Structures are given as structure tokens and as C-alpha cells.
Length: 294
Ligand code: MN
Image 1 (cartoon, rainbow, N blue to C red):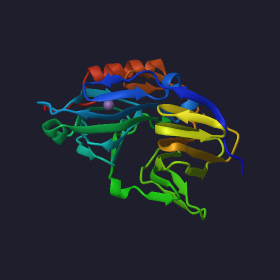
Image 2 (cartoon, protein in one colour):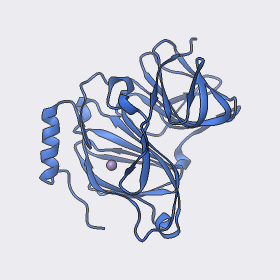
Image 3 (cartoon, rainbow, N blue to C red):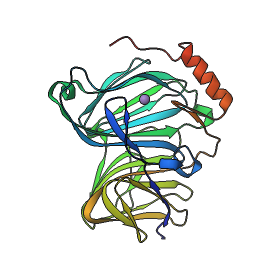
């Protein structure tokens, strides 16, 4: 058993606002939409912000997506969602929304009503997961994954929520997260106490990304701190991460790369520019549906 070393550490640019509700840092930096992070595309992290009450919920109005999945992991507050496939939902703290845009949806993402009325803290992660060419035009799908349905694995100083993919306990038995995915991948939401270790076997060939949401860790002698993402080298069969003196919160993303061309333009991620032009035309013609006015 050999632990993977670190290939590169990605540096996030400064935070920017998405709509008026989410102050995010795109943690993949320049590696977003490249083979290095496949099957993932992009990862926006909205660290906790305390919002005052507002006359209307803050957030992002109607916009389309095609060709991939959006995964929203809410840590604090709530995010209200509506989409043109008919889903209306409130994603609460600890819940996850796994939305397959597929052939196209129009959706909106706002703070929950109580955040607008009373004020409150909001923090969330939004991950974009690519779809292989064969499934880019699949029918839109919506998976509301509630906190209570996410397995929580614990060992000394470690708490891992297994949102997707396999997790192996100390005896080697595998637990699987509830998310249905189109390609093999894992998403683990992890809290480590000071000095605690995360150790997991991972399949050969999978890309492995360790996103540090707070605190700091050491991976194969390399220090990785808040808002950095360690991209693991393909030189071992397990991941070994040790938390620093203040502990750490991590989102670990791992998966089999999708070895296909990526053509990304705004909210659309396809394989060719021709397909991007078709997506723009289909959205403009209303073929991704629409939302009723709020
Ligand atoms: Mn969106």
C-alpha cells in the first residue's frame, strides 16, 4: 500500500458574488474545466457569511444549464430551488441537491425565506460534475439527498459524510453514498480534529482532489491550507491526509476521469463548439423550458 503524493496545489482566485446571495471562491482556479480535475468541472465554495434580513431572498435568478450536473451541498442556512422540470425544493443545512441538467433545465437558487426574514448565516459548496457524451442529453433528473440519508462514518478524530461513492471502514467493508452518478466517483464531506488522519483506498486511475474548506492538512509532506485544493499524483493506491493543529474541514472529490473533449461556455458544458452553439440556440428558443414568475 502506497500513499499518493501531491501533483499540484491549486490556488483559488479572490471571491466574487454569484447573484447577490453567494460570495464564492472557484477553488479549482485555472484547472477548472481541464482533464486534471475530471470528472469534476468546477467547484465554487461559499464560505460562511452572516446576512442581515432583506426584503426579498438574495440569490440567483433564472438561468439555464446543459450537459452536466450541479451538486449543491448546504452547510449553513438554506437554499431554495425551482426548475423548469417542475422541481421546487428547499435544501436545508446538511442536505445535498444533485441535479442532472442533462439536455437542459432553467433554474433559480435563492436563500431560504427565513434567511431573508430573520437574517442568518449561509455557506454552501457548488460542484459541477461532467457527464460523458453518451449522457449529456439525458432527461433532467433531480436527487434531493437529505442529511439523514447520508451515511456518517467516524473514526478517531474523523467524521466523514459519504455523499457519493465508496468509503471503506477500518475492517475494509465498503459503504456507498446515496447519490446516483453516471460515472464512478466519490464525494466525501469531512471534518478532522487536530492531528487526525484520513486514510482510504482509492481505485487506480481515479483523479483525487482534496479541497481544504477550513484549517490545514499535510499530504505526503506537503502542507495544504484553507481554500487550496491538492491534486493527488497517480502514484499510489490510497489517500492519506493528516490534519494540522487546528483541525480541518475538507471536501474530497475523487473519480474516474472522462477522457473526452470539453467545450465549456457559461452555463453549458458540451464536447464541441457546435454543440455549444446548439445549446445557446435551444435556450434562446425556450426549448429548455421556463419558470413561472415568482
Ligand atoms: Mn445554476
